[in-house]
Length: 177
Length: 442
Image (cartoon, rainbow over all chains, first blue to last red):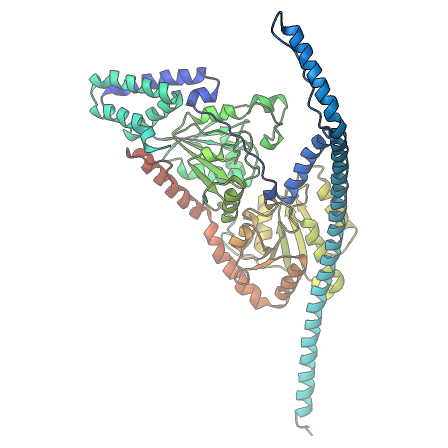
């Protein structure tokens, strides 16, 4: 290749390298979005992952049983009509919230009971898992014993057969004088 | 990415092929257009690729592992790959902590003096003085600390991420992610699907890459195992050997194996006494699991059980050569697919030394041991004892299985590994050098 072109490639490379070093953000470097959301599919999780999932998500469920919306201050950017608009909005919201509270109270109570029930079931499941592990340990210990005893029995049986055959052979041998 | 996205590259190559100084302004303009439309990195990548197509230099390869400064099986995999490719490529080993050619030579007997080592410190981990750079420990909302490595990846023709760290976004023309197991599900900073190739260490890992990362089944290259006995066989002793790291979580199931051997001693001492159970493995200081094992053995004295921690390689080699049976139960009682052996290097090492393996029936071990042909695969400690006792009483069976085991182990040698690596990278390079590109390459 022509030396002038090789030199040009080198020059362009150095120029791009310099530009690359100046860019801090990867998206700017590749003109592409890097990140995407990945929703969790609980059904696919392993037992260990489920434990982590519960540990991460349960506390947040426990702290938000209320159905009331988060309180946001009502403000207005209008200089003259702002105050009456804010007053009207506050009045309307208060009357709606008070009215809703009458039957939402029952919903809140239900939510709290549901969370308590979840927690109880969770504890029960954990206890059962612990117990199951203990039972499994015992079963595997019995199985080990059984396996060794089975082999030992087999060994004794084959020895017994050998002795039996030897005795039979001995009996069948003609007596030597 | 469709082939049309590389129109810019085709035009650039057309001007370069003219090989005329008059085309210089066109080359410059073309690169400028690519840079504006597709980003600086794409323009740079086209230039790198053109250099290789026109044979202006050797293709460059950057190989990254966040744990190159530790001794490990995965690191040995990556470094053996480098060793196989160092003639063909201009290689840079990218590490996060200081490590030297001398270290690689003494840890793995690999001479990588033709490669350069570049250390890129990551401020997030430096501030925390963390030697172990675990992506799983990065809290939600933290800026991706591995973006510095992503940026570095864009300086090579081919970038190989050997650390199965899916938080590194590859910017190079071609990228290869080597995965020993997909430990995290896709979430923030997940870029495994941005790599041109994903290579796994076993079919088992490949299956889980498909399930967890939803990527099409990747190709697999089994790890290199080189524990062949060399010249002169040692007479075999009645030893049962276990070689596995003493993990704090106990996932290698040494406790279960010791308890099974104790049962054997208790129920049938006449047969057990002539055998010795030796457990070998590495461990960090103050390992509570190891302390529990030591206590278990102390409480049952006179049972022919030996624990050997952090022993030199020469001693391990001797133990392999003179032992008869190999027990490995990693995967038993698992709660997660990552707790099953993804491959099982020590099992292959044992087989190379004519030992009969008795291993857990799961994970990568299923690809190594063929039940009843070159060892036994078991689902419980009871089955482990059952098959062991069969072998205790049948010398001929031990003889035939051990010979088959040694034969099977040939599938996993370093020579076989290097052959597969060279063939893969030759194919990659052939496509890379050809102007008619199809993408992705596989």
